[in-house]
Image (cartoon, rainbow, N blue to C red; front, side, top):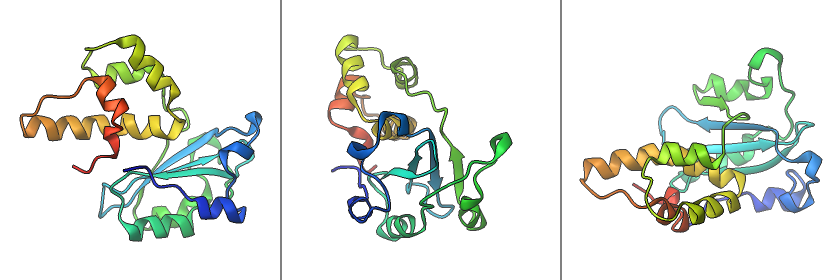
Length: 176
């Protein structure tokens, strides 16, 4: 089980693979998109400093229609608006009543993960090393899945996994 990406768009030159992106073009704008009728569908779009789409990832349990829609309708280029407004290129998603959040300033630090995960057991140094080795979009997905997984585990009276297990087994890709 792995996070789905858009290799075909990268090959066609619509988006640029991370290996071809210069350090100065690392993602600086990130948006999450969730449709109103199916909250397990999550797409994360990452744009570089000039507004070019550089990466896109989906939660593991995304439905194929949503993946197709996101692949074909994701803005290839954005122009950020002032005052924290979403770029106008997302207006059609808003019209479809999708939840769109600007997660550009999302805290992806290990300290944030350690606080959110709130199961401070195991070897913290190994967990920190593993966390810091994850790609940015995986860290976003991992942080976003913690509460959903905790609610599921609590409802089934299942012991919550150690943070190292969560990261090593990529539990955010599980279907609950």
